[in-house]
Amino acid sequence: MSSIQYTKKIALIDCNSFYVSCERLFNPKIRKKPVVVLSNNDGCIISRSNEAKLLGIKMGEPYFKAKDIIIKNNVQVFSSNYSLYGDLSRRVMRTLKRFNSDIEIYSIDEAFMDLSNFPDKEVEEVGKEIRNTVLQWTGIPTSIGIAKTKTLSKVANHIAKKKLSGVTSLIGIENIDPILEKIDINDIWGVGKQLTKFYQKHGIYNAKQLKNKSNTWIKKSSNVLSSRTAMELRGISCIGLETTTSKRKSCVVSRSFGKRIESFQELKEAVASYCLNASEKIRSESLVAKAITIFVRTSPFQRNFGYYSNSKTIDFAIATNNSIEIVKNAISVLESIYKNGYRYQKAGIILTGLSNAKDKSNLFSSQKDERINSLMRSIDNTNYRYGRSTLSLASAGIHKKWNMRREHSSKIDTADFYCIPTIKAI
Amino acid sequence: MKLTIPFYLHKAGAGFPSPATDYIEEDIDLNVHLIKNVPATFVIRVQGKSMTDVGINDGDILVVDKSLSPKNFSTVIANVHDELVVKSFVQERDKKFLTSGSKDFRDRILINEEEDIFIWGVVTYVIHSVY
Image (cartoon, rainbow over all chains, first blue to last red; front, side, top):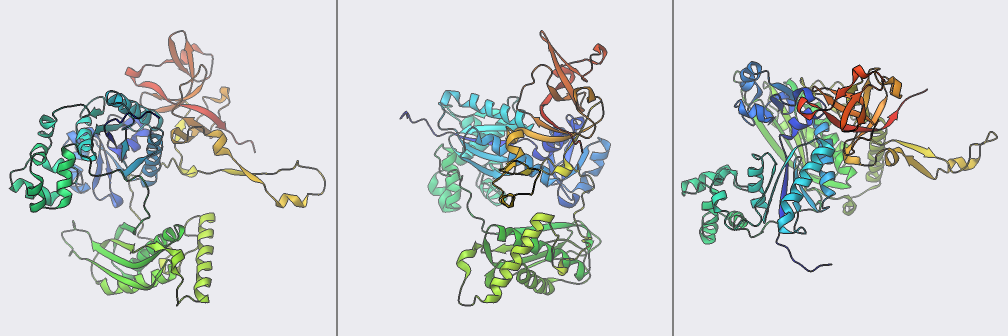
C-alpha cells in the first residue's frame, strides 16, 4: 500500500431530469421534445426536461396551471411510474459502486462518492469515465461535481449541469471565490427558505459572502449546522459520507386518491390498506412500531370546496407489527379526525419509534401473541408467493376505488416480467 | 426478476422415482448465467417478424446488455430515427450497417450518430418458447 495521502475529494453524481430520462429510455421519440412527469395522482410537475424548463414550466407547479403552455407547445406528459424509476435508480447506483463501493445514496437520483484515492490531476477524467459508464450502461445522463467537501461538490454539480461534458472539478483551484460569488445563497446545500430570508436580511446573497462570514457571527445568529455549511464552503470537510444503511426509524405509506373521497367507509379502506402495506414492510425488516400517526387532507387547489387537513398520533399499548392491531388503532384515530362533508384527496399513515422485534417479548407477552405472529407469517408468505393482497383484512376493502390516478403512465416496468418494454422487429 | 429452476442431483431414470428426489440440492439461477452485467442488462419482448431469418420470432424475449460493443453479425437493439428496433449489426471494412438479417442489400441502414441511427444495446440471449 502506498502511503501517499491525497487531498479529500468528494463527487456528487446527480441524474439529469431523472424521471424524464427514465421515460425517454425506451421511448426515443421524446428524446428531444419537451417532457414533464407529474406527481402521484397527476397533481404537480415534479420532473422537467431542459426543453420544458426553457418553456418556463416551473418545478412543483400544479399541472392544471401549466396546462396552457403544455398544450400549446405539445409538451409530452407522463404520470409518475415509480417502479420504473426505482429500478433504474438501483441500476445507476450499482454501476456507481463499480468505481467505489462506499457511496452514499442521497436520494433516488443523487449519490455522493469518495474519490480521495485518485490523484488530484486525474479526478476530472475519473468523473468523465463515471459519467460515460453510467450513460452507456443505464442510458441515464448525469452531472458530476467534484470538490473537497459535500457542500462544495453540490456547488460544482450546479456548474457541471450547465456544461456539455457534465463534469466539473473544483480540486486544485486556488481561489474559488469568483465561482462562489455566482452561487445564490438559496442554491447552497443546507440553506432552506427560512435561512435564505435570514441571510438576505443581513446582506448575504451568495456563497462567497457566507464563506467569508465569521463563524462566531453565524453560530450566534443562527445555529451550528449553518456554521458547518460555511466551514464546508471554505473547503474543510465537516459532513461525512453516510455509507452504512442505518436501520429505518419510521415507515410512511401515503397516497393521493384517484378520485376525491367523501365517505368514511372509503377513507377507512384506504387507511387500512396503507396500514397493511406498512406493517408487512416492518415485519419483513423484523421491526416493531411504538406509535402511529394518521393524516388526511383535502385538495388545496379546489377553490369551491372547503380545505381541511388534520393528523393525530397515538402510542400502541405495546410496540407491535401486528396488522390487526395496527389497523384497529388506525381506524379509531381516523374516526376522531374525520370530518363529514369534505372531499378528501390524500391520506397516509406513519409508523414511528421503530425498534428490533426480537427485544419485544415482555411480561405481557402471551401464547396469543405467538399465534398472532404465526398468522402474520402465513399472511406474508402467501402474499409473497401469490402476489400482494392475496390475503388481506376485510377492512381494507376489496374494490379499492380510491387507487392512484395515472392517466399518462408509460406502463413500462424493467423490473416486472409482465411489464417489460416491447421493441419492434420491422 | 428472479427465475429459478430446481436442479436434481441424480439422472432422470425411467423406473420408479427415487425417494431422494425430495431432496433438492440447489436451484439453477438462470439470472447468474444469462445476465453477466446486472445493472446494464434489460429484458425486452420482440414484436414483429423481420428477424425470423436469424431465429428471432414474434413474441420472443431478448436479454439485452447495454454495456457491450457489438461484434460483426451481433443482434442489436438500435435507435433508428428515434424508434428502438431489433436489427443485425454488420461491419464491412470501416462501414457499419444495420440489416434485418436478410442478404438483401436494399434493406441496409448505415449507422450514423448524426442522423440518429446508433446502437442502443447488444442482444446476448434469445428466449423462445417451443411448447
